[in-house]
Image (cartoon, rainbow, N blue to C red; front, side, top):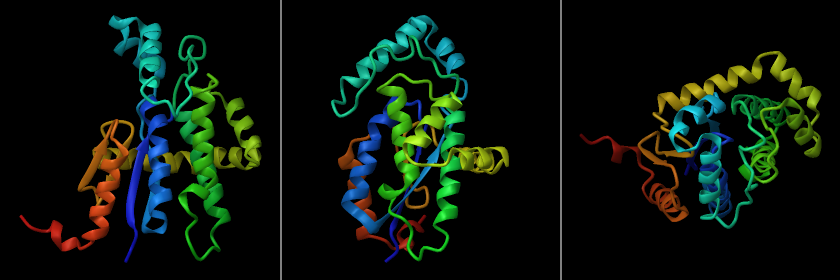
Length: 232
């Protein structure tokens, strides 16, 4: 039987996605090769400053958003969040981080072309890079829209930043990022994080508990027939 495909859409500056990454890891650990996880990016903070200034203008601007982030963080003891987030370090956009991560995915794909089996999601360097990037921002309040931060993370993970730069300069990375953004629109992704299964028929958005995600996967493993979705 083919593995259940789980498509996961997120924005690296989204705290809900930061908290949800643990659930994604739990899912991959529990189901192993019974599922196939495809990580994609959606654009929630293309202009982070503009978004916060507009959406949070009546609620204290960056200071109000900082309070909101800390309130959310208290609900998730498994994540570390810097108490001064968005007050001193203010990334301009999530797009540059997404571009960096797409470049790593391309490098990873090029290096695994001769492998007979797909690499497990948790073993991927791109999975680790995504987590390290999120932690750099949320736990350490680093500006992850800055290329220097990307270079530091690449070096920490043993990735040749020269190759990353090559994939960005050649526009390979931006092409793949455009694919992600187009897919998120095609599938009606409303925000971050979003889990999509069963060819788009099942969509879980926002702060969704692990048990609900797990139940959806188990149901698809029990009833894999595509015919069941064909009735009027």
